[in-house]
Length: 170
Image 1 (cartoon, rainbow, N blue to C red):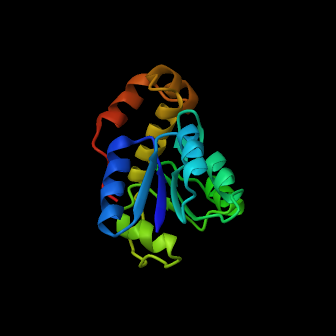
Image 2 (cartoon, rainbow, N blue to C red; image 1 turned 45 degrees about the horizontal axis):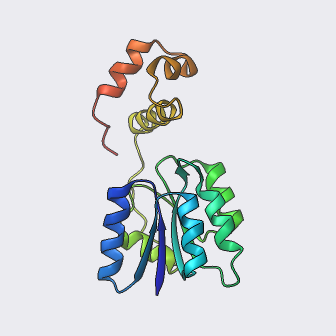
């Protein structure tokens, strides 16, 4: 079984590689959509795990490339910034599942095999959702606090105080 892992977060990518190697998979790694395209030309995978947001392109572009293969793999899309719109788009393009980070190898493997993860009552708190939203906007602004505060219509110091707190528990 061959799996392609496409993620710009190197420590996460390497941790997944090690977990899937222990499970008996042949693993290919890519840190960007361009690297993923190069890997696809060498040996097409049966499975693929694709991060949604990466520098140099979108994971949705990788999903399109994977689905264009003569024998498309089972694809799971991962993201730290999940929205309903991107989830719908990923599924529409051919991904079989869409998981929020952090996802572990067990969850990813279950999703690749079409199994549903066990349901939990862990609904994120409003404080957690706000913290994730603020960090997503800050990431969209390339770390520029002033620009993020303008987009959020919030005072810069207030945004800094909220971001300095530890992430709220789920």
